[in-house]
Image (cartoon, rainbow, N blue to C red):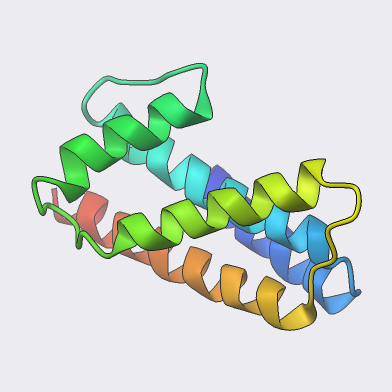
Length: 118
């Protein structure tokens, strides 16, 4: 979870200096490290991002341990990150970066709340 919080901080810093694509990337990685932290509770990890997301979805969202609506923000963050990292002509806005950061903060908070209740 420390890495997730570090990525949130990096996303905020990038946003402040107008590096919106970098902010999107760091917000996504905040999600990703929170996902990995939760999965570690069940002794699972994967070398692929898709594997980490799929396992988390199966174990935590489909079972309603965590709110199923989180699946939407995970998917949205992943798509934004892919576009901003790999599409040379993708232009992101401050508003989009702010939204992704807000979602990442909420997600990390929800995972931390669950983990601390165990």
